[in-house]
Length: 279
Figure 1 (cartoon, one colour):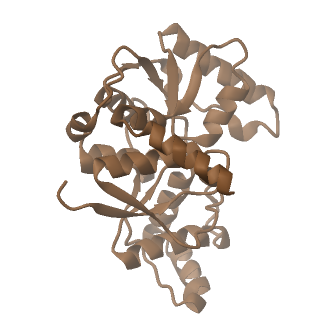
Figure 2 (tube, rainbow, N blue to C red):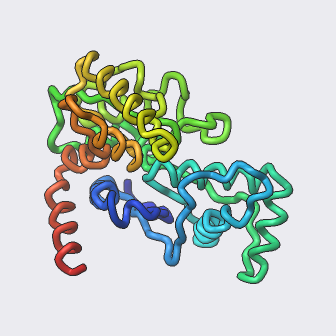
């Protein structure tokens, strides 16, 4: 890439505390691949879950503000967290296709001199790799191919559904993370539970549900030969690790493997250590 492309970047709350490594590895990898994640100033929590009611507009406003900010900079809006991606993408869709949401949101935002009608393109980091960098260019940038590693992709719910809005990948047979795994030199493991819900959002109602779901996912991945699982959802990772019991599978963020393959993992870890010391 001759000119470095800059994306407005919405990190989300979890990437500032429990999932700092997801963020750090992504930033380092972006630099290695020739693009930059420019964090939006004064962003607010996306809410974690998209409010389905068309009457619930106030909860959508942080996402609308972020979308408008990226639009005003002339940039696409990138994110890493599966939940943030889902909320941003669905909110953007509502601002285009739901007159009630558009009208009420813009009425709220008049005081901030904001008018937004869905002009921003929302991209997950994986979509940037697939659609803008290209898997062949990712392969060319790899310095430490992860040859021999058998890795299972865990998509969960929020990257894939609702598929008619997100348009991230085929919800029944997604390929983007498998293609990512191939690009960094490893071997993807296809297993039945990779796009099934981990049950994390039910933990407060009945903790046996996420426990059962996590075990089913991990056991299924192990049965098909996976040595490791990768995800982009902090809540999915937490749930799978918390409930893995006898499973030996580790669950890590896909950006960690990317940083390792690109040769920037250690530098990213050092930046995290310095940040912790200065905190």
